[in-house]
Amino acid sequence: MNVFEYGSGSSTLWWDKLGAKVVSVEHDPVWFDIVKSHLGQDSQQQIFLIPPDAVPVNNSTDPSDPFSYRTTHAGFESATFKNYVSFIDRYPDHYFDVILIDGQARASCVYHALPKLSQNGLLIIDNANVEVYLVNVLSLLSEFSRVSYVGLAPIDGALSQTDLFFRCL
Image 1: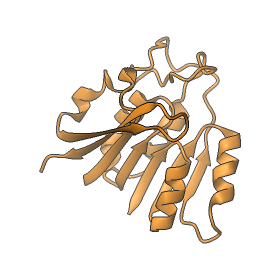
Image 2: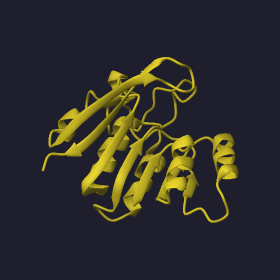
Image 3: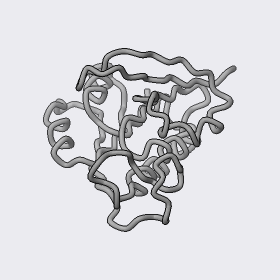
């Protein structure tokens, strides 16, 4: 199984235990080192550290705009994530069986991820209850069925929603 992750972490380690081949992009150098240190020598995971871009891509500061490459996370108000988001473009269309979006600039990630998802692939968007993540890209997902899971987030214990999108066949 070929998996792409925007944001690495516990899911990276979980996919590793399942034997999946994972490509993961991470923007945070400290977190990147922590995740890498937990992967075994025989791991098939490829984790790439891609920091934010220093120069904004365009004038839009709206994180719901898929062409702004902006994030909602504090401290990154003047940064964009075009290199991070577009890393997936290096791979052929329909290459990934699963794409997990749990990182920065999520609206932009959805836009870049869809061509790379296999015909029977699964798109997973974490924290989908944050409206800004999906408000401007839901129309791109019109050919997909959506299943939502709501539960307590492991980091802060707040209610969070994870959405699974799969094509209607």
